[in-house]
Amino acid sequence: MKKIKNQMLVIFGASGDLTARKLVPALYNLYKGNHLPDNFVVLGTSRSFLTDQEFRDKVVSESKFLQKQIAEESSEFIQKFTDQIFYQDLGDKYTDSYTHLAKRIAELNEEHETEENYIFYLSTPPSLYETIAKNLCDQGLTKEENGWKRIIVEKPFGYDLASAKALNEGLHKYFAENQVYRIDHYLGKETVQNLLVTRFSNSIFEPLWNRNYIHHVEITNAETVGVEKRGGYYDKSGALRDMFQSHLLQIVSLLVMEPPINSSAEEIRNEKVKALKSLRIMRTEKEILENTLRGQYVGSKIEGKEVKGYREEEGVDPDSTTETYAAVKFFVDNWRWKGVPFYVRTAKRMPTKVTEAVIHFKTPHHQVFSSQDVYRQDNKLIIRIQPDEGILMKFGVKVPGLGFHVEQANMDFYYSDLDSAQIMDAYERLLLDAMSGDSTLYARADEVEAAWNFVDPILKCWAESDSVTTFGYAAGTWGPKNSDELIAEKFGWRNPGDLLTDESGFCILS
Figure 1 (cartoon, one colour):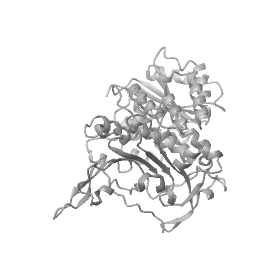
Figure 2 (cartoon, helix red, strand yellow):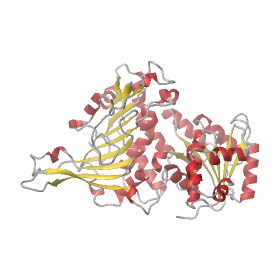
Figure 3 (tube, rainbow, N blue to C red):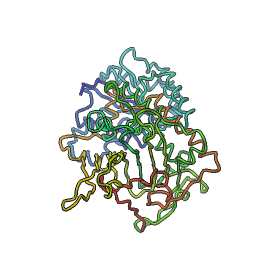
Figure 4 (cartoon, rainbow, N blue to C red):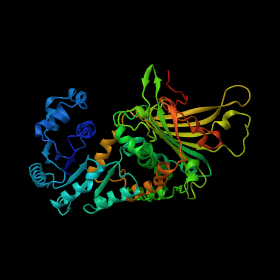
């Protein structure tokens, strides 16, 4: 790995939950792994008034998210990490002048020799992105005459296509596109990145990765939790906006994309954009009604415990039709994927917390053992993104004995088996990439807009059409009863268990 240049990370909204829960633990692990540059400073800023020491206590010494790690190391080791962390009060409003912030940045830069290389991490609502970018520009903190300047923004990248374009235009007034890093923690997961390697470095897969050999593709993202304390936010968002438009379409783009010219960030992102633009957009109400399904979990008893229905959650409209389950069938209009259906679903209150992509291969054209069940158990390549990360292949083998009785066998690989490899957390990987200027795993403006362009007509139809139904499903089950009807030829969804090799289709009602 190339040596990372000296730099400063400025976190806006640093008194919020994300900094203590994700960002500082990620930075600590990078520090422990000796990945940080020689001269590195973290400057937190927000509207809360805190001293440097109070901020250090909040995010390090008194943080429940670092408690275990701190206990394992010497006080000198922890102190050296903590000494790199500072705080600057921003004032009453984010719209106020950043004069004091700019002065503090300049002082820390000179004192710690960070060479005017700055990353601005916006852990704030998207409504503040343009305001913060403008104020940074007013202080001359976006210019790259001396050192580079980068800005990281969290999702959601807009509420729809129009707002996504407005966000991009707002940022582009003050930062060039190559300075903007739109973070999607799903792309930091090792197994998501391994999609590229699995496809493009193995001749046993790439020649088969097309309509001639693949029958259909399915992607499942399931969570066991409900909306928790996010009911107010979630009721204005829903599963399609919250997960499908961002995380899951990113996975789709990696499955669908053509081979890039090389492994550079821009070439990979060029192909991802082309992939998203090739998704067939559903423009009529008839198409959307036939190829999408939305549901909402209702109250049930799980493992002896009463679980609220979605409409009973705090902050949720009692008459809400917002989906906690969304399933979409779509096609990709290019040579490679012409006629191959893709099925993607995302939901809360499922039996298993899991994210995986399943490639279903076609059965052999000449079925020598046509009387055997193997032809109703298609060959599958299963890429498990979380948990129990790994890859599973399902194929037919002969059962020992007389005749040709065929059963499915598993060939599996787990990242946990790689004892010599240190698997980074998603935020660790993404922060390290931003520090080194690698934007491969960050979304580009046209990529975000291409995803919204596909999703927008579905959202509009769901919001405006009286013909759209929201189906109920008991919390702890695999969604509405009619969800399997979406998949052609009655294949049905693969309902996985906690382990990669599980395919039990269970539910956890009691």
